[in-house]
Length: 125
Image (cartoon, rainbow, N blue to C red; front, side, top):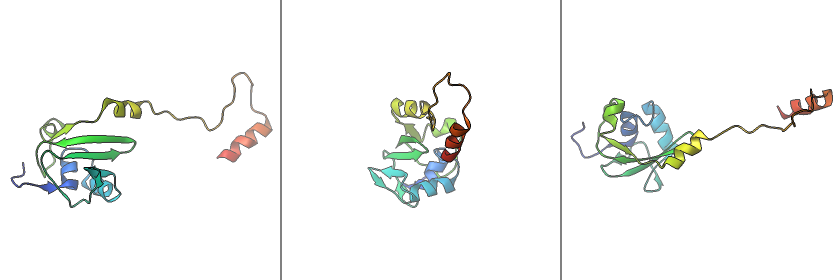
C-alpha cells in the first residue's frame, strides 16, 4: 500500500485491475475514456481516496470508487480493498445483450440466393 496521499491514475487503474496493462490505462486516459467528476483526466493526474472514476472499457462504462491507494499490482481479491465497483447492473446487462444485427435480411423459405442476389450481397462486403 502506498503511504503517500495520492497515486497516478494510470498506475492505480492498472494496480486494481481495471485495465490489463499500464500502457492501456494511460492510453485510455489520453483518449478521454477515463473521467473524474465528469472531466477527462491525463495519465499523470493524482487520484485520491473517495473519488469516483468513470472508465470506459470497450462498450462498458465502469464506475469505480477509490477506497485505498496502491501503486503495485494486487490480486483480484485484494483489489476489492482498494476499489468499489459501483457500476449499475443495467450497464453490465447492456454489454451482455449486445448482438450483431445482420447486414441484410433474407426471409426464410426463399431457397438459395440467385446469382443476382449473390452479387448484391457481395457488394455489401
